Image 1: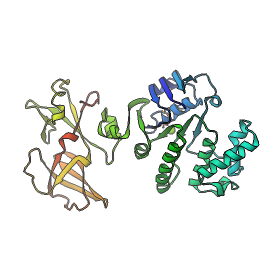
Image 2 (image 1 turned 90 degrees about the vertical axis):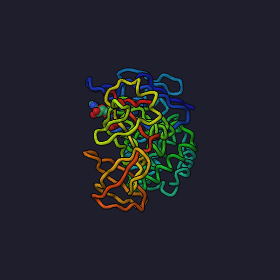
Image 3 (image 1 turned 90 degrees about the horizontal axis):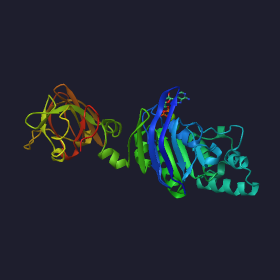
Image 4 (image 1 turned 180 degrees about the horizontal axis):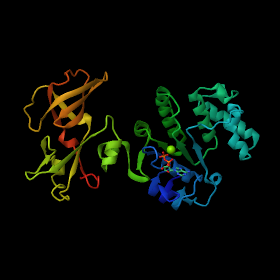
Length: 361
Ligand SMILES: Nc1ncnc2c1ncn2[C@@H]1O[C@H](COP(=O)(O)OP(=O)(O)O)[C@@H](O)[C@H]1O
Ligand SMILES: [Mg+2]
């Protein structure tokens, strides 16, 4: 049983901030992913929780204990690194047993626990091998085994799958998720891969430049981004972000086209600053028709490129000077240069205050 809480966590290296005023609560048994671009402070945060790095400010609680002054060993957390960090001269058995031997666990108990973990990870047949005799996926399992065998209160994982090839990564993603659920151990998992984050996490903490952007379930992050950064970081192909202003007629004017303000903003917009806006629409929410539909709010666009993906077709469409991405069906046909009509699903339109980047809602 362990919840983890960060209160006002900050870390600077030589006055350069890496993590800024981070507040985060992770529930017992929860799987939380720290997500964000390279250099946003994910590893630093994890190392502070593990006790490998001393915070410049703030408090870290693990299971209601303030752990700031505790050694890594006393924190009862196990960390899994990207680089596995296995001992090359030791067998798989010894690698997994090592943390227990270190903790002076009696030999007989070690045998039981290592074998149990090996069974769980389906590596019983590999216990006599050296790491060099293992595939990448097997090595990763051994690294996990070494973390699990300690039966820690919290798992901390730093991009543990990023050294694996794409197919194995997808497989291990599902396995890790199931393992975490079965073990019921609170887990904080770092990745820069949004798909990994979205598929594995109960909640995702999205960071940028050391600052928490949004902390939410994967669906909310996708459907209700709190700001432009979140909108742009989550989703593939990336969301279309288009500069626009509220014009005198009460429409959204994007220079190359105008559309009505969607109903969900009717209350919020007049009261906003009246400053510049950004319209966000995901490529999946851009409807494309080869002929001009009767409904209002359609925009003529020219096909720039098409990318057939098998299950769908990604279109780059030109509207004046703008390029707008759309996802059409697998059977979509259209030549570059020809005209199509697009419509933004109004209930899926996002609006941001362009000055602050904050979502208007
Ligand atoms: N030991 C260190 N000394 C100086 N700067 C560091 C050190 N570790 C990390 N940083 C800096 O802190 C910022 C956050 O790094 P990090 O936490 O590793 O990011 P991430 O894991 O999200 O890629 C980066 O700007 C990085 O250069
Ligand atoms: Mg990192």
